Amino acid sequence: MPNVDGVTERTELLMELVSINSVNPLQAGERSGPGGEAELAGWVAERTEGLGAEVVLDEAAPGRPNVYARFPGSAGDGRTVAVDVHLDTVGVEHVEGDPFGSRVDDGRVYGRGSVDTKATLAVLLPLLAALTREGRRPVPNLYLIGTVGEEAGGLLGAHRFHDWAVESGVRLDQMVVAEPTSCAPVHGHKGGVGLEITVKGEAAHSSKPHLGANAIVGAARVIEAFEREHGALVAGPAATPVGTGTLSVTQIEGGLARNIIPDECRLYAGRRIVPGEDPAAVYAELRTLAIEAASPFEIGVEMTNSRASPAFYQEPDSPLIAQLGDLAGELATTAAYGSNALVYEPIASEIVVFGPGSIDQAHKAVEWISIDELDRAADIYQRWLC
View (cartoon, one colour):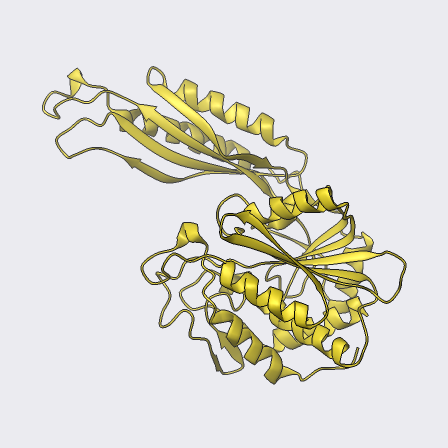
């Protein structure tokens, strides 16, 4: 595949993508409005259909469609690969300036989603357009997948694509999950389970606290127990390539008024899961720990999104990891964050997390990606697909 229009085409396309508001609805706010991925999904569907792809729009939730664009390969051997790009971005309430008003400055493209992770679309679409203009195709069958709900909501779109693939009889030989990895192939990261905990107390006048039962006190006991558990998890050397498990309480809410003993307190805790751990067993252990710590308070514990994810892990010398490592000139590595890779093991023989730009620039008030990274990723994808 020859080089395409180059920097100008990729940067201009990325700027157009950034201008499309696709904030995850669960992180929407005053600046973003209701958010949602529908406009971007429609844009990708129209653009890929114009390149000759077979396109499916598939609702993962009402008004939130995934898009699956299939480009038939030239090899004719049935080999099928996929690139999954999540369409949603994180919220923009903390962004400096216009979050959807992308700009180019000092060799960088700025704007929400520029690095996480619209950059991969801006790399792939010009490459596919170049093939179309020349009457050529990728060597393997290629699915370009746009998924909703990666940033919040339990990997909603990834689960829907998994189900669609099973329903449609689609089996992937290789799957690239797009995330900003600085073009290093990521072969493992932690899974996770979330716990929604409600501690029940009894309201009373704050001048006579003995007549009530302070639910915040019960929640504090759970937090202390979880903090001890976290300390035990990280105390020793890591037994896995992705590090140790961790446990963090990240949200707490309770209290009716300053002069009322609170009768309820709610908190959220997230447990990161490493290879070899059973998510269901981890959840059961933490549920028991929370109930015992809160006693004698009544407590309810629910699994967030009714799902838990085992860790994603693949040997670093597997063919896909080794191939992308060679093409990029980078060693295989692991990541601290999670991704849609947690969902795809049943439908893909090999999985890698890979993409241009650094995760250090993601989710920040000023988000950016260097144009050099876009060029580098384009070269790698060109050689991988052809």
